[in-house]
Image (cartoon, rainbow, N blue to C red; front, top):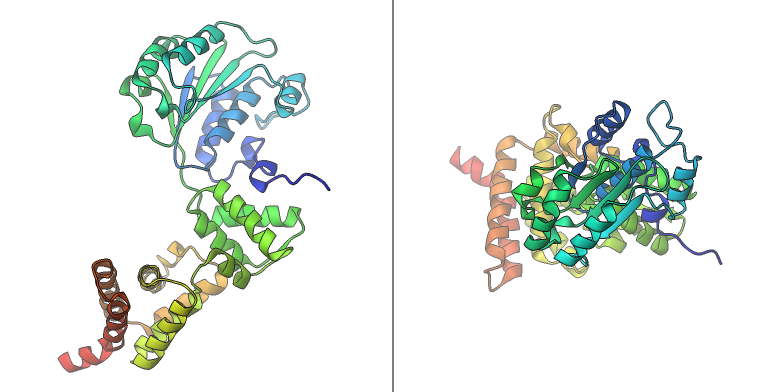
Length: 370
């Protein structure tokens, strides 16, 4: 049996062009290499799983490549690239600041920095989770970071920029990595699925991308989990079942029951949701998000803000036609108040049911006022 390699490692980008969702950063780095305007220290900051360490490794590989392509990408054929791809490059040094955060660790690094590279032009030092260095270690690192040897380049990566000393920040070029959009994550997952010969429904990939919350690594890990559960056929139903996600269809049916002023259907649907193991707070949060999405779908200019698949987007557009702005504003107010009151309530189910009854009576209340 072949050893399984998780998708996050197997499909880790190896060129700037293959990095997902960080176009402005990769373009800037490529231009710096092409014009020979490289800084001696960089700070890559942003949420987890968005490509900070990956971009650092690609940058290190590219500046030492002996035969750069016309697109400023590594050739993957020269001795430097081959040694990097086989994890035996002596030009790239990765340090985990979480477990190497003392002054002695930094002193050892400073001694190592003086040694010129054996192959290629630069020695690149990638320090991950740099915010975990102690204050003393940061201070010991300052002079070397400001005036390193010509062959040394430092790339610091962190998820918590605010914890880094201002004196360190002032010595670095700072790149802020953004969260991966649902669309970019879905497209990359589709590429992985095609490569692995897995049939997928676009709506399923969309759910995975939303669940990953902007982290591509998380999206790939969830994708592997769904493949283990579903095999080579990934459907929307199997995906929401495995991830314990509440089906969009419930919210569409509930909104229709509010418009029809049908309390019985609304309460029955909520009971069905509880039977499936979802708690009331999770339900109210999803209902609030649904009302927001319906409101967004009412205008052609804002419909692009919907982070859902094409089929579900069309459902939102159709339901938005049935809802007045007044109804949606009142529905959002009611659901939000219920969500705020939920934690302090002694009878949590009743709190949600009262909110549903009120939502069913919104249109009737308006008629009485008018």
